Length: 293
Image (cartoon, rainbow, N blue to C red; front, side, top):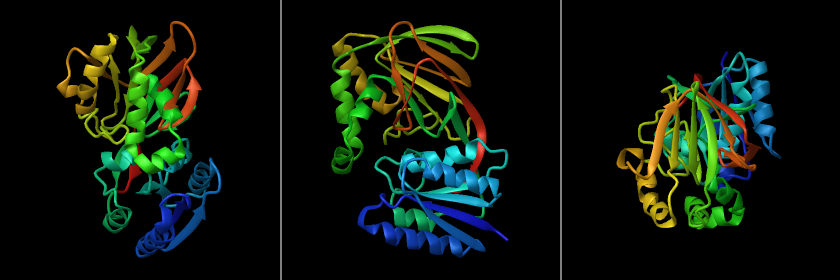
């Protein structure tokens, strides 16, 4: 008997939220013998619901909501020995994981197209005691992301992040980061470090074109320390991806690293939400989940 849990963030999806939920339930009920639905009311609920589903050894867990809700669902499963198969229906502003998996960003199409016959492996990242599915950002861009108000996200979508990020980048404030990457030490002067699991960051799908959801690697990209003019010139290369850059961007892959600041204190951003302050330990958990797509 196949049992599934559908975790729904009722604040996502706008006026069509109820309609999307009904469509998703009908789709799941056509395949699974028993489908339970739980609605989130506050932050942390989706993680708790997914954790309980793993403890009960349900066959599958599905999440309906934005990137934050999807992150919570994944986090609730990632720390368990038994991990149900995972699926989601994107209702967010950016939907990076959906982009990386090649899913439709239209909720109704995503529901109709999802297949339950097969799953694909999915890498998960771990930073200190937290889990992530997309990106850890350190430096100027995280400050910009944290400054974006909810109403700006609703009005401008992913461009709200870009506009805020550009305002911060032109301040050209750089930091000195000390890294131990797979056992090798390195010092980087940069305004921003991005550590991604997938090719899509902030809705821009070419930033890490070589990254795959199951390659077992973390991908580090950073703006090399430079003057304001060179920083502004580097932005098109950043958005086009590392394959189109040479002098303005640094790039390397790794499996585990520690990152600290030479001076001062700085908080990181994990999948769009403010995280802990440096120093951090970050690593990849290769093919840690099986995901429907």
